[in-house]
Amino acid sequence: MQDKEPVYLTKMGHTYLTELTFSFENMESIGYAIDFKEIKRVFVQFLQDKMDHGMILNPHDTLLVNTTKEYGTKLWLMSLNGEGEYCNPSVENIAKEVFLSMQIISQTLYPDQMIRLQIHKVKIYETPNCFTECFVDSIYEDEKMNFYKTNLIDIEDYSKEKGILEYDDRKVTYTYKPETK
Image (cartoon, rainbow, N blue to C red; front, side):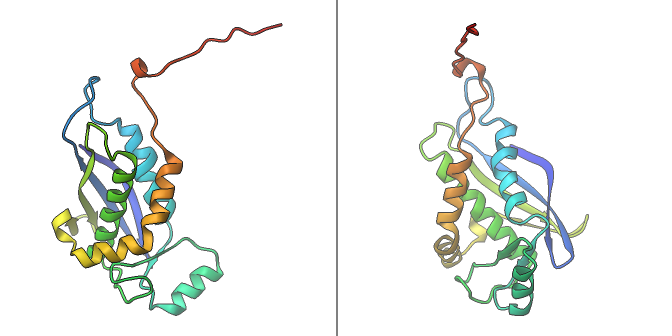
């Protein structure tokens, strides 16, 4: 299950095309694990809200961080090495942070769901021919723990605010209320 709609992340003038690939254990009776509208509404929207057309920076780049804050521009601070610690915003590290963000969203919204939706791969293109891929095994445990310490609560809150929408009409109850005069 792959969402090919481009998500463009920017970092100091660079533009990246991002692909998200999800895996699942079971499908709903309607014939899919999750409607692509949900992937776009929650997972892709997270990237657009948090990273797209913003600055993705190393926390130690204080001049750029302060300037970005001063102008009120969207800012994502890298945190694989811990909050405020040096972390180069390379495409490989950005892919890890995107993967971990998608993992948190999936675990928050679908913890006990029958489908067991999980992020499988994040692929980020630096150019049309150069890209990196990130899988769960690409991330060191200490990077995951540092990222979770810094971002878990914010991403969980974002996920809970988005919630889950049901697209299967058979599961949605409509109540007809005639107009009264």
